Image (cartoon, rainbow, N blue to C red; front, top):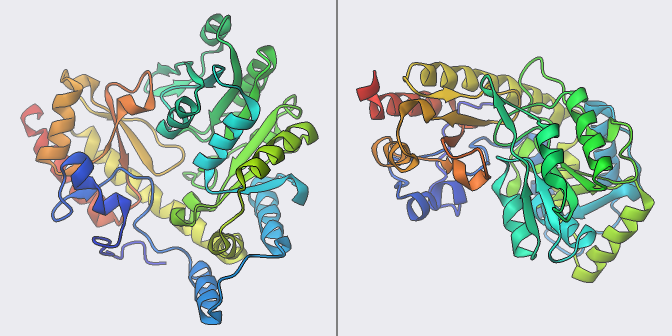
Length: 390
């Protein structure tokens, strides 16, 4: 596990590296991509070994007998998260954006509202709107530099919203919050009050900073009849190209609705992703994740210390994920100006805050899952780009 290894990903069809010039005007030669949420690290050797064995066999037919794959999922969720699931609860989708889209299709109708606690992962709004539904934005409260839930305000705006579903991001992207049990109990009560199907996207649940504890929504009482859980190996092990996600539904009635929609769309899993997932959800994969989280914590410290030295900038305390949410409000600059300094002067490609919804206007999101030398270089570039503020 050498997370310091510099791997040249240019010219490899990497969205993160090979698309940043087209989208952000940051050239691959000399630019630093800190936007797309994948890592610049090799996955654990067990994943590579599983693929090599598959390739060595040399046949790529339809995947059959998923008992080992589902057993690996069940082992991981029980061992790492204290949650016991059954094989029959597990569906495999082409990643969790696809999983979200199928949920929108299965549990709402065109014109219905879908609640998002914004700012939040931008793909949620994209698939909701593309499906002809409406995004109902419930803005998170920014208090003392971190996000908190504001149920009183949200209750007030639900009347007449036509909302049928809520998508929760836990841990939160882009804010990096690990929601407490009390906050999750509040979400459960909110979903009950407004009769919402609760879809909990927990794709970042393994990527925790030291001392943090993620509570699966499935361990909160009172949501059993309305809960859809989503998790995946893809973020945890840097295998996003496998496009494999777990949609886990304990409730029989919801499960039947989801299964019907999956059948109507003709969805079946990619065998490469299943081989990779089964290998990843293992003791060797767990050891790799523990080492990864320790390394990401070191990157967080380097990045936050560097940002703290730039007047007007503040990085939100990172409790989970590898995505740093940086507020530029204190600079007094318009979003176009501070984004230009980052992209044109520092030559760093980043996600723009407004794409995450209300509350994101003064922010940029930085992906720090890259060798530490690159994180240190990014800090130096940012300090130079805002050097006139020193």
